Amino acid sequence: MPTGEIEIVAESIEIPSHSSPLSFLPKDAANVNEMERLKYRYIDLRSSSMQRNIRFRSSIILQMRNFLCQNNGFTEIETPYLFKITPGEIFSQLGFGTPNLTLSFLSLIPKASVSRLPAFVYKSHACGELSTQHINSTVTVCGWPGHCRLSSRFLVLRDDRGSIQIYCDKNSLQIPQFNSESVLIVTGKVQARPEKDVNKRMPTGEIEIVAESIEIPSHSSPLSFLPKDAANVNEMERLKYRYIDLRSSSMQRNIRFRSSIILQMRNFLCQNNGFTEIETPYLFKITPGERCP
Image 1 (cartoon, rainbow, N blue to C red):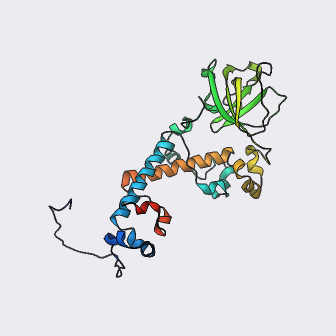
Image 2: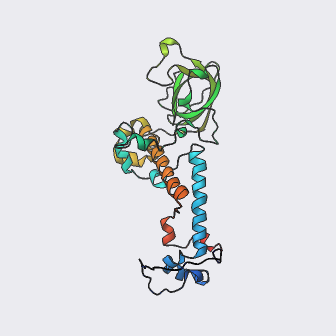
Image 3: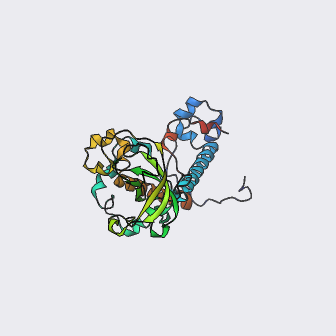
């Protein structure tokens, strides 16, 4: 025993919770058949091997979340978001997208995550990060175009950080056909817009990218509605075309906010205060990891 050199001389003993007679002891769980362990799951979870596996799993997953979300700008999104309308969307009409938030609560969000690009993506900048400081720089941006007019030389490319105007010279650039919300990768040089064309309503309204190449890694079919119009679409339509709804700015903002807050909660409880995260299925079923000694 690691504590074999010491002992506690008891002065009082309290029993806040009594146990009924058990079918087997936690230390014997490895020798009990699977159905018996499943039937008495609360005993099985007390075995040292299960405790060790659960804590190890919790620690590894927390490190993965920190690496991806906190250090590399990714956003965690739970599967139900892909299929159903959630209560958080009710607040999409509000200014920030979440109700009654205080500045102290908002300060929990890591500021770096607002401007940091997710790692492992094939772009040099986010659309909303570009400014007059990047004039004459060659950049690569990825995003979704809004309304597409093939007769026009201009298109506005949008990603999760903002939007930027793209200028396409039809004499020097072969422009492929695409629909709104297709995924585009645009490489080109940043230049200042003519003074008469400056758009003060856009944070990037003083500049544009002169496209040198346009790639389309993913084509979009004609859409029922555009993400910017999602707030005016009825709930069943948004649910039917969930993949469009998730691209709306209000949904993106809500999902990122939720991901950031939950990560801070996990770090506070698990990393700073010794808690262990355990998923509900562990309470009811045998999982492959438990068969490890």
